[in-house]
Length: 559
Image: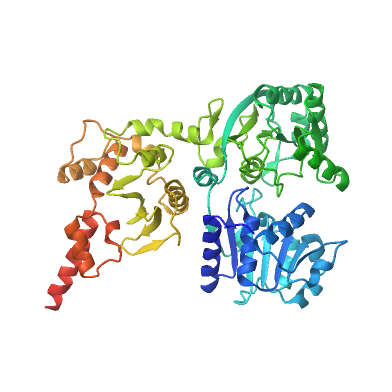
């Protein structure tokens, strides 16, 4: 039995709350290595209903059974696949999608209430859709819950997961999970090659495999990959992502020629041989796995310390899945090394280090993701004439953030525009994350109290999806333009000093800081006494004044 992490219990609470509200087809999105299997095990335990778990590979089936037993010991669970049928009549049936789609009549008789779709970015496939439909999970039946989990809630081929799921009910980013200490940081090195992929065409959102293989599977490039690992890999257990099976073999040979124990593994490989290779890697007898279409999803090897992207890709989902293999925590592991092999291309937009944070970072050799993000924001940080120093810890977090935060007393505020603000407010030994609406009503993002860095990550994850475009982004171009006359006039009315020639970004920051002055004790006392707000310490002086004025106006109107 294991103790769930904070975000795992948050996710379960979000799922149950949305189900009560009538959302019967739900999706959660969490990075690789954060325990999505644990979450659906907890969900099955909480609901205690007949449960069907669907996955597309044998390793995922076995992993689901093992991890669900960790959080749901004593559960009646089994596997249902071609040569193994005992799971069909268990309370929790973990089924291969290939077998399930052929026997939906058998599964329908079990009357499952919960259907879990592992690696749910595959859910648009006809096989999944047929199972969902045949078992009644697409009928918006309030007694049934379709639950999907994925690290990448999008597809490169343009098909929308919204055709299957109604809502993403819970999500966290790679960056927020690294900040919170649930994943290791990733250190990147971009290795340039002389290989051109200019002539490679695009099919269904990514490179045509046959053309890409011909372009990149060369002795010179394969040798470069092996040499880069020897130079930078620091003897870390590593995994190479290749274009094809032959590419995997050729790269393995390049490593072996240089004395590095490396074996190829691939999706259609004989099962016994595959298990032997993976066992040798786990035992340390093999240093590097050269992989094609096998270890992208569901491979849990925390010791992986080096990820080598020998396969160029335009698919954000594939890139994140690959790099995610190296981000799991492991005793003594400080970070993951990402070796990114950059080919010559002007016509293609390739995924790279910045793909992990949905932004552009100028990677310097050996920088970690957090360091690169911090440096990318440094120019904007220098604009500040009065940097915040009220909390050393929070200032450090601000410097790693793409958003402009302000301090209001002990609260940290992130303005989303249109009157909405996300607030990280002290509570107990940590922080609560709250959304303050224009009418000053508040909504909590979590029932628990979070560490400050994780609380900031939760707030920024919400801001990415809900803030007005470029409103509070440090990199927004408008921040470099000269301050407007309206901004300067407003600063004058606020009696705020400013330098000649300040930019719109500087003026906006000064205005936000002036407007973020915390409510006075007298205001807080008045609001508490009259029950005008359930948590007035969240309010700024201006917000508190507005609330008090509204109350007094209402009293005058009824007098």
